[in-house]
Length: 251
Picture 1 (tube, helix red, strand yellow):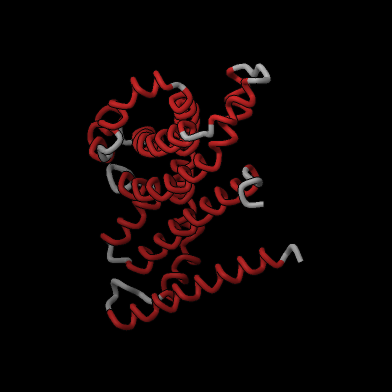
Picture 2: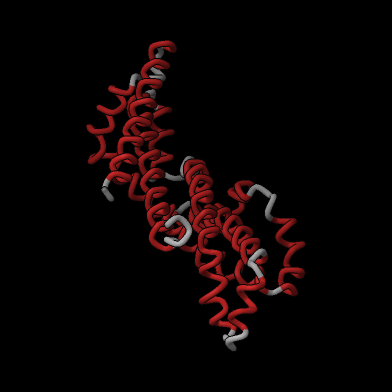
């Protein structure tokens, strides 16, 4: 019986894929243009060039995304917990956060490219910067809204500051942190595509735009499929991590 939810989820995913493929086929017929090939042609191209071309570009993009998410989490979570716990620190930092958070970080791409060059570092820094703010603000708000009863109960047991973070703030804010990572993943994928279209010859974003400029539309859609699969797999990993680490939320 315990396998029924998993089977149901797999069937739901397969049904969704089928719906997308049918919709894709219908649009391809209606548009009737080489720029929008049918799904069969794109999938065939994907399977044909995966090992020779796509796998390498996909590996580079995967590295950039994962490294950025890890660094943003390592920096954003502790700082967010600290600001949410300390009213004084939050009051002092609030103007800076409110002024810088709404600014679209992609406008700094030319500056980052000038300072850090056209390699992986500049792309990782920009993606990290964007995801960092999302994790920071979400974690800080979750820590600020933590019920005071939780804190008072463990303080009554003479818990240290480290134990407060370890046993109260971090576990209580973990669902919000993982939610911010899921939201940040979508943003990171969009920014990844943008940064990989500038001064680079590696990454799935470069492959898609290079195929487009070469009028190889079947390969362009093969790249889009690869990028979608990468995002889907990363989202599943985050979803699995939430189920394992936050089992008390949805038992």
